[in-house]
Length: 109
Image (cartoon, rainbow, N blue to C red; front, side):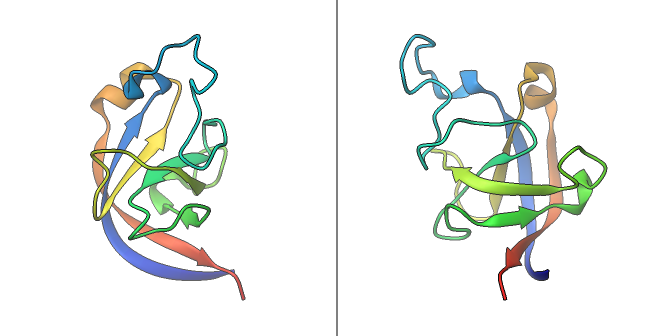
């Protein structure tokens, strides 16, 4: 695996309730890429910085079930520049998490 250090990002967390979609809507929990959000997988990033579909590694989360690997599947109106929003089901964690963390993009040989 080849890692490209893309720098330090402001990392926050979000839940399915943060986009103000109606829970009865077919697009509820749907990401900008058309997939549905998944814990320990989905992150939102600025596509001009890290394109949709990219795999990122955030060492801070290396002890999580995903071992720190995520897929950029979403964007967000406040996710611009060096910001990443990690999806979680836990509203309490999402509302209080904010860290400046090192982020790598996984490159395919």
